[in-house]
Length: 145
Image (cartoon, rainbow, N blue to C red; front, top):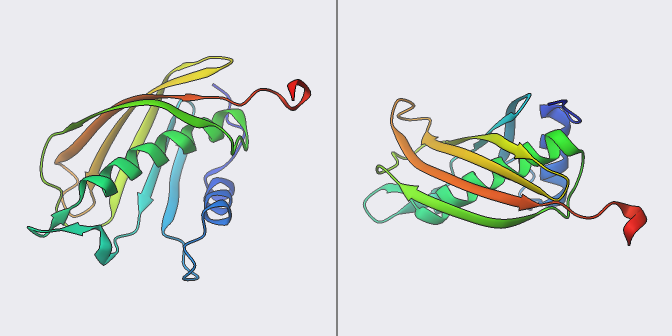
């Protein structure tokens, strides 16, 4: 699979399209390579849930963001690509820290991209916290509007 955007381009694109309003970059695209993308969500206090662990919505957002980045890395800046479905399995409690998510493309079709994603905390990189599978629907080419 050929890459259309670099990690740096994707980080800029994400943070421009979804600004935090605080002048920082809460989402970093660490690496993209054929068929894969890895993102880092920089830890913020709001990501914590009672019990001093990462919240479910934070982990779901990381998985979804990694899939979104993988799609754009391989098809270009398709900001209107949308989540078609996502299945989640929470495996372990997530220690507080940056959240790392890595998405792998299983099938890159004309209309749908099917992916597999793993999520963990940078505080415990050896411990998988969430596994997700999902797909993204691609927008039609501009000529079809």
